[in-house]
Length: 576
Image (cartoon, rainbow, N blue to C red; front, side, top):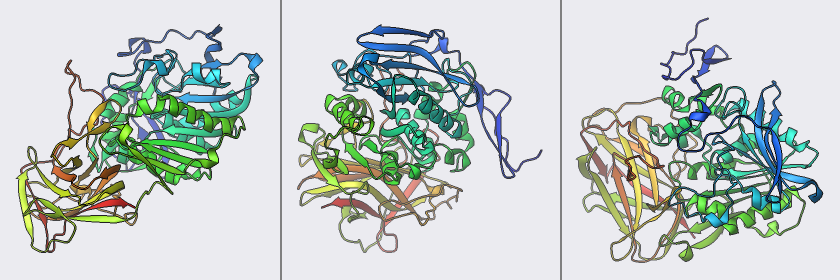
């Protein structure tokens, strides 16, 4: 059989038998690899052999290594934490992720801000605490997906197989004699993305979901940013999903094999717009490069009538496990899994923390109708002669040249009145790569107080030195389509158009959403450069959890132009 698809070089760990599926005349396949023996795991405890047993501990009944049959006969293993039978039938919270149901701890990574007193030492990574939830009448089930750890079969990283398995698992759990028949899902990151999948598959017993912080567009939020390959997080993910007694999909190898937005990414999450069950979602302003954009977009796509969104400005694990957050989670599930009336009708549809000085105690919360937040465009035009941002168009043409690999340029605007900037922003930039046919452009927005000191914000899971917002674009991916709006340019990422060295081109760069107040006298700084804003190394020399871009196409100098026929402008979302 012949195919129009070109064969990519397999990863070094790939099994010679690739998974191949046909779609029309196009041969499609994923790069698979032999699993790493789970007992050889690095950085977390190793699982023991399958040990089916039921014990009573800490007021719970715990069923270890319960085998759940899938429709094709494969068995996956779950751990069940449930109240005693005398407590009555229990609704279920399912946590579905790749990190190992055996990895239980109340000690998060240093810098996370999670107080160990908030959760028990039986808590799986980014999952709900079974001690808390069983004490409130819920069962917590933590699953090892197909092909990971001791679960049978081969692992597919999201996609149709995982959706079928989620469906089968939910319906099997709902039929247990100790179950009320009502299932919900709760968790962070992968444990949130699996909720998109399960809800789009629509198992009848899945009644409500609460996804906290997960990308929803594999290509634009995980594989690349603006078409620039992400090189820090994707290898970590590939390691996380490598521990198997069968074979596993190799996400990093597959993403390198698919530099454009194609079928590989399209199948990952299912039809998010077909989700109709009640949904309580949470995002954070500080998770740029991973979860912010996807969570906001998924909320808008979900078709549920009963749906709520919170957007906070704190560290994501701290916010998820904070006792106040857990109480809101319980209010939500009490409503839809237990049928209790606890006042959700008074929750705002969308609420967002507007950051001020980087401390949550000085933030304010505002309510919005949707996750677009504001469509009021506040334009600031680049004046390169003064290195300033101006509220009115700049007539004279100006330019600035700098070394794309080592230097940067910054332009500033000082606010004369208090202004809330809430939502996604964009930068139209006229740029010439003087000696190259491509350019990887990084955009950073930062806040400075009247004395000139930078105001830093929580970012990601463990850091406190983040900027206001980030944006990226590979210039050869500059094509936009009719999904674009003034604040959110949309790039199809289906082909490349090389630059002609020295010729200016218009770049419309998406800047991920943020929520920040600028008081009178405070300054917004726009920085343009050809590299990551921050790179961190721990004392041991090992990079911590961070987003990186180290496969760049920058060379020589760039010339940025503005004014006249080269109108470069930053567009900000100004909230009333």
